[in-house]
Amino acid sequence: QVQVVESGGGLVQAGGSLRLSCAASGSIFSIDAMGWYRQAPGKQRELVATITSGDSTNYANSVKGRFAISRDNAKNTVYLQMNSLKPEDTAVYYCNAAQYALHRDYWGKGTLVTVSS
Image 1 (spheres, rainbow, N blue to C red):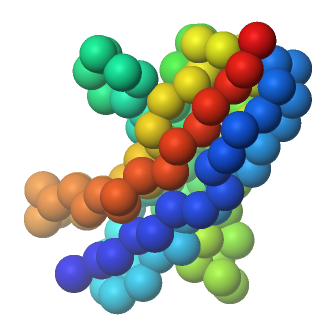
Image 2 (cartoon, rainbow, N blue to C red):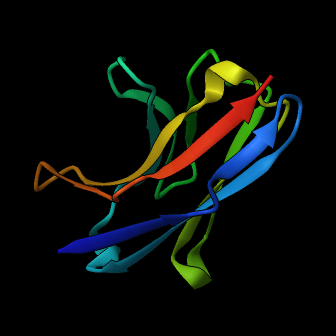
């Protein structure tokens, strides 16, 4: 089992920055990738960024050049640095941990990011 807990959401003006954190615990040695997803009101959950155990990263086109995902293995934490925020970035951001061999995904409860215009 893996547990993930997000933090760092809040209210920010357009053009501002926020950093989200996701702390993992439990069977973290078996995690193949971690990532951030978001869900805006009335929309489906979508991928924002992922990072694998080998540090390969992937970003949604809408956030490339503005967001950066990183990890601190010593702290079992993944970060999402969000710069140049736009009102359309407003959403609940969820952390995900994936175990490919076991076909398992673990989700946090989410953290709300609100970008005002």
